[in-house]
Image 1 (cartoon, rainbow, N blue to C red):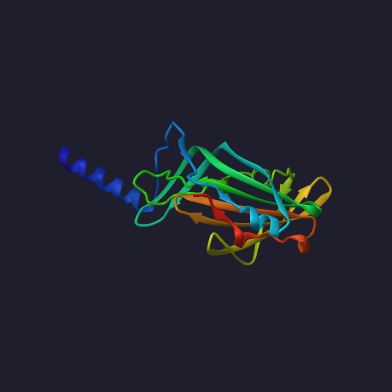
Image 2 (tube, helix red, strand yellow):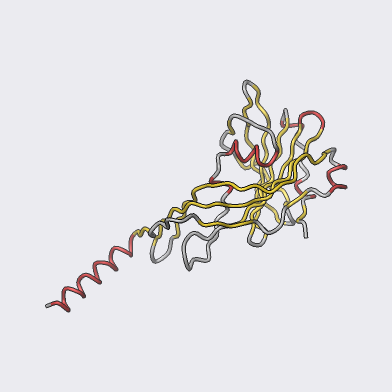
Length: 205
């Protein structure tokens, strides 16, 4: 009788796993650091009319949510402390361009999937990290075309960033670079003024 009860309990567990499972949350946050910063080389910055105003390393805290589908669907949430690189550039006419290089994070043990922590941050915070310019909010972006970033074709997302009663044109692109993820952000007073040198971005050795 005891053996039958054990078998029944095992089958019930398998049935539960076939649907949706929750991975137990870890009490300690995962910590990760980016390996090398993405930058706009000095010559390329000069050609585009930009000067570098920020080059630093900073640490941010966030919470990452994971959904892994397959034979078993897993959902997990994990706090993360990530150390990232930020490079910000300024040009005439109120134009800004910036790069955030963050480590990708594995939050489900034994899973090959790694997550970029930057999308989990508030978009206005990402603008400040990348461009060293504060904005109040960023509208939901839409994809307009593709650009080349670090040799990879990726979506060019456009939106509006609000600074008080003033609207700014916002452009963003993201790619993976090894175990890192690079987010490039451009701001300008008008859409016509956005001349972001995405294709000139390089990685420091």
